[in-house]
Image 1 (cartoon, rainbow over the protein chains, first blue to last red):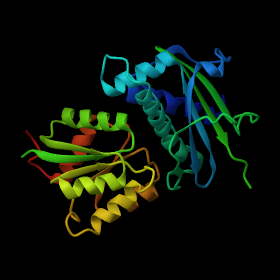
Image 2 (image 1 turned 90 degrees about the horizontal axis):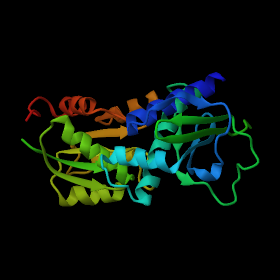
Image 3 (image 1 turned 135 degrees about the horizontal axis):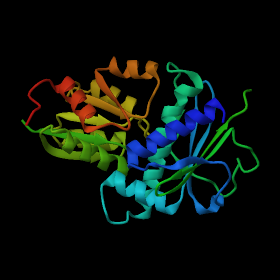
Length: 151
Length: 128
């Protein structure tokens, strides 16, 4: 695993734990793709600064429901719009903690609001710079990082 | 003394988390108002007595930094204590925000950390 992938894994795991009390399974990073991407609810955050790119976070339905319920401290299943909100916030936190790894602690980045993956996906044909499948105690997460080519 | 607090964040889930954390922090709370964006926050400030604002940075439209600028340039609430609550990690940007008289708390945060920032801003006497 590259240093960048390791950093992204660590940031993701601490975000899931601190934000939503989701803990990793014993073998947290999975070597192979365990699920189809369609099985996940996915959101992207575009960032721009000294470098630019997209941070993508996907969660299985059970992981997303757990995350949202824990963030809201509620037992009742949260409504879909709140789950999408929670997913976006988790992606924001991961992205915000990733940017100093990419360009140092002095660099200023702008993060766009989290957005759903468009139907015509401009990243479909691109290989991500990092692609992690993370097994949590209550479901699966996929974190992908796409860095824009340097001009 | 109970403090009236305004929570500004475009995420309803994050606003709920912040409010819950505020309640757990032990700081005596009066009215808690919410706003989903900078413009709504200014409307709330004009219609409610607010002692403290917790403001997200990255919001569509007027972002948190612009909101702080508008607050600091207003006659009525220029001195309002503000805590920026954000995923922002740039030391440069955080320093710039603090130079505008705001405290900064990094998301996610514990009740203890939030309380520490509130006491720093509002001084002793925030105990129940």
